[in-house]
Length: 287
Ligand code: MN
Image (cartoon, rainbow, N blue to C red; front, side, top):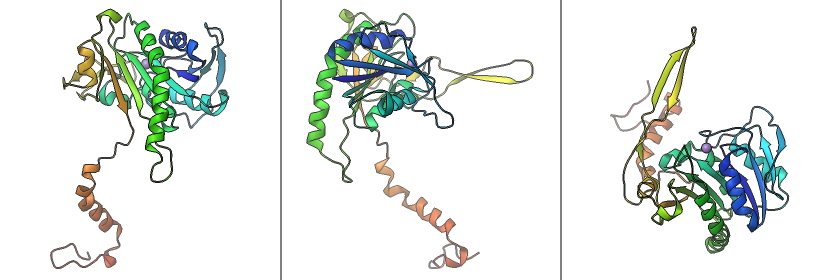
């Protein structure tokens, strides 16, 4: 099994090497990650400048590591397109310092990097520990090692079962977004398959000035999460490991028929006045 490993906390983070140690016995592990922390950069890709890369020191024999002067998504794209020879069976993004719950996954560098594997049909896992201080990575490593082979097998079976999309693209296995409570394994209350939770979005802004110019700092204090049963945050608050399958079709299908009125108004605005259909009386005719 060939495993690509990345982490938005950077190539020098504790979590990435805990993951590498856990996964190395399963096959070939290649590390490609930003040369510094890139949390909160989501799926950003560097398009406006070249990205430099150097070999990083790896503490694990047989594991090669690349330090990328770019985003987490850059690290995955460059590894898949250039650094790794042969097909990648599994992409792991983590072990991240800090939870990735609910709609925050859209901001997450951890999930943003994993999406580059998902988009290419590679079984992909984002894994995080719900703590920013004194983070316990070891249980996450144990979970990864137990999960990796099974998930790859399941993904292949799922793909075979689902076949192709209507336009002929191989159906993708869902991305797995995993969060662990920051407690010793013996204190965990099991593993729960969950859905994304929801929170109120009101970020607090710290401000100041340096003499001439004002600065603003978007701070995440304690987010206000809904305690909906079966959600990722709900599981973590009960000391359970949370595993959420993610797909990226975020189309609001229920809204499709309801938007036809707005689409019509747009069409009308685009039609030169003389060519607008003269609707019976009350409509907006030629102006
Ligand atoms: Mn991070």
